[in-house]
Length: 397
Image (cartoon, rainbow, N blue to C red; front, side, top):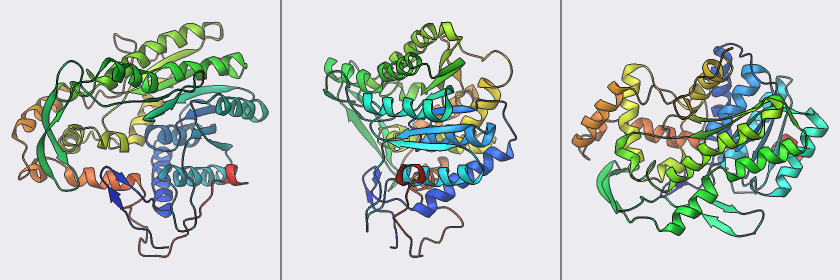
């Protein structure tokens, strides 16, 4: 079939398997170009199919020759219907890993469930014995609690008062005002259940109790802080409460792993174009301004550049892992530089529909958004008849 992007709001309903394959190959090429990392050899990535999770799997495998198990919840293809991009990304990753002589298997299912945790533990026992690194990179808007069966939904809301500020429709470039009503206590609690640290802790407890964590095992979850201009709807909103919980959980995990000299970290990463961030009011406008400035300064990074630097310069640099006063790894350091943020603050006040193309990088935002779904890559013939029925080797075999 000829596969074209079909948009509905902040979601693309189609994905291009060849484009997703090219995306994975580009990231692998980048990691290889940076040289070997003296890093982990057996890695579990929970949330491995897109964004930072996919970049973590690629960096583990092609940066330090690690065997990887990836967990994700993606829709497989059907005749005439494409899979989700994460499915195609994972299929391409496995093929490339296997071609390089690396172990790579995947589990497609609800990572919040006990069943998937048990399936992964059995796979580790049978194939790898133990794990050196666990990356936790889930970005689900809903969670079925494994103990109660209750379905919780997260919300993107400010706390305490209505939030009003600028945003941009990145499809049209229209800059407008947006207002978001404040969260209820129930909204806050539900968001913490979905996006906080409880499931991360459940994963680590299950792995430790099954004796599949190696001596000195490390686990890393990803977070975001961001600037003052987004904090009301992000860091001081419902998501921020969930991130606070996630960050506190890192200390609980470290405490629980003391007897194996294990460690739990939260890495605070840079703002990037993801399906999730595209749906958050204010964030697309902020990112379009941020990209323009960081590209001009030569310090722009995508997911793979961020994670490769996290591994090489922080986690596996040979010394103590550098953290901030709250114990967090700060790989958002370039984004949060004073010269970058002061420029954004100025441009934010000036931004309009008419001048955003000039003062921001809306084209870069749109390009990155299309890339998420496998569109817009050089070297891919998007007019060619393409087989949508691409399977993930370890799942379909």
